[in-house]
Image (tube, rainbow, N blue to C red; front, side):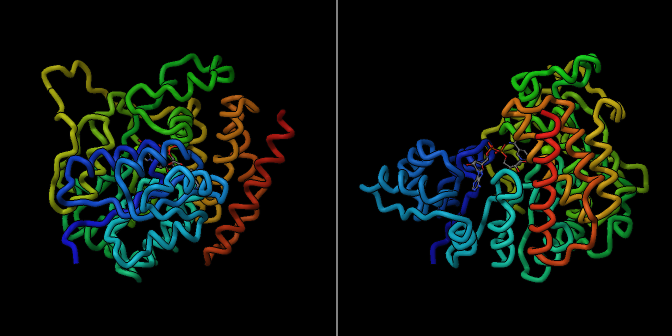
Length: 397
Ligand code: NAD
Ligand code: MG
């Protein structure tokens, strides 16, 4: 048995996937890439495979896999396609660690496969946890998986928690003397923009995040602050707390990545550059520390460090998601699905920026919300919400 840590990267060609590969490259003696999986970007996947020679490369569809197979015919990389193949590599016996960094609901089944195989799961794909909440967390416990949050805020919160609570959240945050979780967010590119001009913002304005470089979907979610709403739901599940225990704080500089407040008055914050390689390195090495290629903050050069409350008129999607969190699983699965369709329509210039909220709110209002007790029921709720969102979009156009 090799002593090296064998890693699978789901969503390898994306922003998080590439940052993960960067951190692994800096720590080659400890980590090996066992398999890479991605959607349809064959050119990027080809170059990653030629450079990092994983044992497996998995593409979303047959067509992309065929092109990749052709491009890699002189290598030993085994090329596969489809969701089941992604689940298989994520659950493979030789694998220790799975980076879950596919965007959206497409990440659910491969991530659950890694959980069910008891892997160390580095969770960037927040949508899968938002969709499946209780079921996801129950599987983590039942199969003895180690779940490490990669989303920078949740990684920060995790770092600020007592070790006993990191390992077992059963008794809840209050048992650990924690009084509140402070979830920070930058407010995105439209923090100070005149509200009257929001309906006409362009795609390129919406994806231009002031501090972070990320994939398109999460960039739009940051502009609407639906991202913070999804993170609010994500935090509830990860840290076994209620919506009342979580407070959203706007911190435009993105240097504090989140905080934990204790009942004695202490507040512990995690700080660093807005660079995802820090949480990725933390997850890979936990409980040790490795080089991430990230410089520490230079406090002498920080001019401003500010905090405000979120304005729900500016960010109605945040309020919608927080309400859904209180309402329950069916509501959170529904807004997650509606939002994926609405953001895709915005990116395709079929609807305006403010229509994203209209679609999300209308789909939630029209949906039947019953308890979801299996992956099948979750997927059915997700499919129903997507259908309603598409109807709503065609009416708006
Ligand atoms: P991205 O768009 O840059 O990359 C997405 C990856 O998923 C790509 O590799 C793409 O090929 C793959 N993919 C898309 N559809 C797929 C499918 N059907 N099957 C298999 N693979 C598919 O996105 P990103 O910014 O890297 O974000 C990935 C996830 O991490 C998202 O859930 C996001 O919310 C989360 N996240 C990202 C950041 C960040 O800084 N980028 C921070 C926190 C959380
Ligand atoms: Mg985040």
